[in-house]
Length: 149
Image: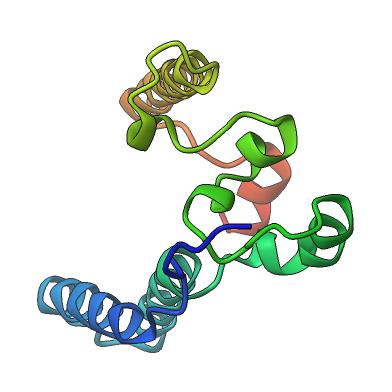
């Protein structure tokens, strides 16, 4: 159905990007204790998962590949445009960035979602700052007692 070059499977890019970001983070953190190393390891695992999802193979497409292949026969799941799952499932055609379609429905939903997330984050951040000014605990009461506070 689609003769595009595969947009996934760029494993050298996964390795290079993950290494650059991990080395950059290591240059600032310089972990010393076991707890520091565990935190740095979790951060490194997050970066590897992030770049694997971006350039390697998306987990969502992997998990839904059976359903997508039966629902949309002949679809190339490895193409860039079909990697936009909502557009594929809802029947929208192509990536709006590629087609130049300014009336694309996703063009309204994504900025609204980002604005809502930023608003929620700012409200939570304001609450945390108020707690800090009062020297109150960030943790709920049962967790605060378990942490020795």
